[in-house]
Image (cartoon, rainbow, N blue to C red; front, top):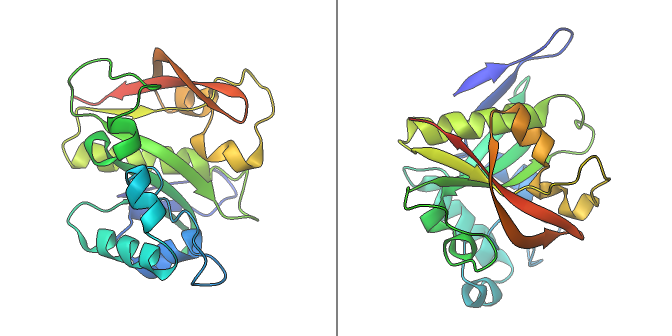
Length: 200
């Protein structure tokens, strides 16, 4: 996919997430039988999400990694996985495809970035920016006409760490996204907005 780097840092390489073991480093629970998100909560219907528990969630993600279109992108630094971004066609993401809180502003078959995660110990090192850029580039390579995100419009207000995965308006503005619509969705008590970057 590509690399990015700044002075005094090792370049960050962002690749499609076909490597299940690397993706597990970012998403797996300490106990395999624990029913953690595995970044499936935004991909499945609420009924599917409730029914899929424990190791079955890991197996679902393993299967997603084998598809032609990866479930997202991973950031590597010096060969070590350091970050994850969920990016996929919005039509594959049941909660966004059917949301009453986040509008569809037109009929474009857009892709969505819905989750950004950086491993502890690697934060504030440019990895989030590299993930966003890499996710956009992956969507472009796969033919997406535009990419959307649904970050909080926090105006500098501190974002609760448990909700930080949605990103902030400023993060996406730096990556060339612009606000396209209001939403009625909220994360950590802060309103979310719909942002978009047109690719073609």
